[in-house]
Every structure is written in structure tokens, then in C-alpha cells.
Amino acid sequence: MRLSTCTLLFILYVTLAVFQNIASILAVRFLGNDSIISSLALTGKDFILILICVTAGIAFCSDLLNGKIAVRKLAAVITLVSTCAFVTVTTLQTSVEYLQDARLLLILPLSTLLGILLAWRLNISLIMRFMMSISIFVAISSWIEYALYLIWDEQFWITMDLENYYQFRDEDRSSSMHGGYGGVPGRFYSWDVIALGFQDPIRRLVSFVFVDPTILGHFLSFAYAIALFQRRYILAFFFFLTCAAGIAKGGLLVCLFATLFWAIGISIQSGNYFRISMISTAAVIAIGVAAYFGIGSQSMKNHVSGLLGPVSRISTAVLGQGVGTGGNRAFYREKQRGRDLEGNDAYDRAEFASESYVGSMIQQIGILGIVAYLCAFWINVPRQVVVPETLGLRVAALATILSSLASESAMSYSSTFAWLVLAAFAAAIDTSAFYSGRMFGELHINQIPEFPALRAVPPSPLQDEPIYGR
Image 1 (tube, rainbow, N blue to C red):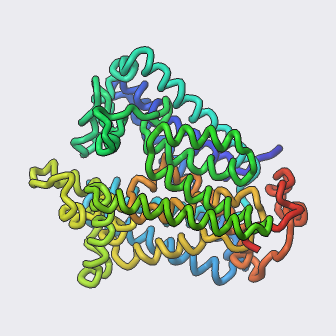
Image 2 (image 1 turned 135 degrees about the horizontal axis):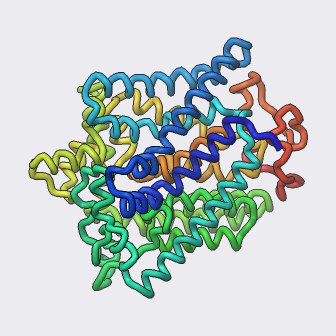
């Protein structure tokens, strides 16, 4: 089977993104900070991403010259390109110190843009199988790492000298190693359980490859949703159990949203409206209980303040306050400069729009951040579902975009970027008005012969039943 350049580059990007952390940790530990291999292990995926962007841009220009671009696709592309260009230009005009801030700021608009531009140019069936296979590997590696922790405590990571690794990464967050036991980062443990009556924090699953429970949770939440909608329930349970053991709140929120969407969809298909009412009632109760315990917590106040703070100031800075003025990096950068900021102070979080990805977008680029977010949200809302195998992917993407309102860690090049590109790609397939000016209607996969990448997708178990979104 001959693979396109875009497909090969995408698979290479995912591979480098997944193994980036452990590869760079090993390189720094055994080759030193000055080794070029250490730097390449950390930045290799970014070079591949640049190649993907160039390839996608060339493909778009080719379609544009051949008259294959519908008005709606062109409008979405112009909106997202304008956002990316504005961020890049303003960053270069200020300081290269903020390039990392700009890079993080581009995750959502760039992933959505690439998904649209690469439509019909990726072998979606092959990539989906690859993503699920690598998700299984990541989940298994997480349990192996935890087994080693139970046997040898934190000795493995102590040997890897993580503190030196974080210094190599030039992280500006003073809390990188704070709060851990025996030389590991504090994020290896969940401290939220102390508020529930526990005496000590609980060790989380971190994975050998990601070495971070939050990234692990967000990455596997997509795999969980896909497995659930494909009715691979044992695999879905395995992914959910791994997310739960990692105590990744953002990932678990995506799993909850996907489960609710799936349960309601199954009930609608079966015509069991009593089950729908019971599920809806249970969801309302669960959300109410979570809100009751969460609203009063300082952590929840920080997340809410990080979103509402920049929204309240947008009238005074329509195009934002500049790249590097918002987000967690800006918050901790000010702390390192000696400013008296308390990490649990909601007022300070509101000032720097930290703990909210959308809040940091609005803080830095103003109204453009809102437009880019709404554009990504609109594209990812499931409407017509031509390829049912991708529905779980799109539901997880929508849940992640929603959770980014109150979480900055929901957006990451290592955990969610590739999934979001695929979700926008699937949305572009389903919303054929982007390409032909009309909807596919009631077509099934085997009725779309002009796109060979889709022919390899196995028949959907739902193909003889009503499909969600019709």
C-alpha cells in the first residue's frame, strides 16, 4: 500500500510526540545537556510539524488554483490563518522570549486548520489504527511504570535525574520539582485527595513515555471515546481505568462527556426514552454534586478566574495585551522575576489568565482568540456523520475544546494536538459543503469511491442502524 507524504509525516509526528519526553530524558541523562541528540529529541516533532504545515499549505494552494475550494472552507481557512499569522508577527515584533507562549497559543487554531487543509490527503483508516495501537502501548507502559514504583519506589526516576532534565528544558515554572517525594515532580502525586480526608497524596500513573499524568489522561481520553463508540468495551474500560489511575481530571471529564453522549445516542437508537430521562437525571445530579464540592475549592476559583478575568478586560484591549502576557507561563515567569504572587490567589490568576486555555487566548490576542475558538468549536460539532468510526474521536475533541475553557493543560502538542487534527479532518469529511457545496446525505463509507483512503475502513457495526447525527 502506497502512503502519501502527508500520512507518513503525520505518523512520524505522532511517534516523536509520544516518545519525546522519555527520549529526551534518556539523552540528557546519558549524553549530557550539550548533546545535539538531546536537543533533537526535544524538538524533533516541531520540525516535522513545520513540514506538515508546508505540505498542507502547498496542497491548499493547489486546490485553490484548481477551483476546488468552497466558500465556507475558504472562510474558515482565512480566519484560522489570520489568527496564526497575527500571533507569529506580534511575537517576532516583541521578543523571542515569548516564542514558546506563541507556540502554545497556536495549538487549537493550527490543529483545526491542518485538519481542514489535509482533508482527503490522509489515510484516516491507517492512522486511526496506528493511534489506537500506540494508545494501547502507552496505557500498558503506564502500568509497568507503576509496578516498578511499587517494587523500587522512585528509584528509577531518581536515577534518571529529572531535575537536571527540567533545567535542560529551561522550564520557568518553579514548581516543576516541588512537592514530589524522593526527587520526582509534584505532579507525580495527586494532592487533591487530601481535601477528601487522605493523610498523604496518592501516586498517579505517569507512563514511561509521557512521564506526566495530565498528558497521559488527555491522550487516552480520546482512545477511550473511540473504543467506546466502536463497541470495543473491554478496551474502552482499560483506557478509562488507566485515566482514572492517573487521576487526570481533564481526561476524566472528557471520558464522562463521551460516555454521556454515547449512552444518550444508544438510547435514541433503541427508542428507549425512559433510559434517556434516567441518564439525563443522573448527569444533572453528578454535575450538581461536582459543582457543590468544586465551586468552593480554591482550585476551581483559579480556573474560573483565569477565564473570566480576560473576558472582563476585552473592551479595553480588543486585540489583547500581547503574546506572553497570559497563561501559566506568564504567571510563573512573573513569580521568577520576584513579583509576590501566590499560586492559590484567584486574583493573580485572573490577572494573568492562567489555568484557562481560552482565557489565555483572549488575554493575549483579544477578539481574535474568541473568533478562533468559536471557529474550532463550530467545525467540531457533530452534524452529518458519514464515517461513524470517527464519531468517538469528534465527541472527545468537542469535550476537550469545551474543557479548555477552564483548563490550559487540555491543549498540548504531545497529548491532544494530533487527535484534534484528526477530528477536524473527520469533520471536514462529514461536512462536505467545505469541499463540494453540498452534503453527502445518507451515504455509507462504501458509497464514497472517490476517496481511496476511506475504502480501507472496515464496515461499521452501526451501518445497518440509524447513524448519530442524521
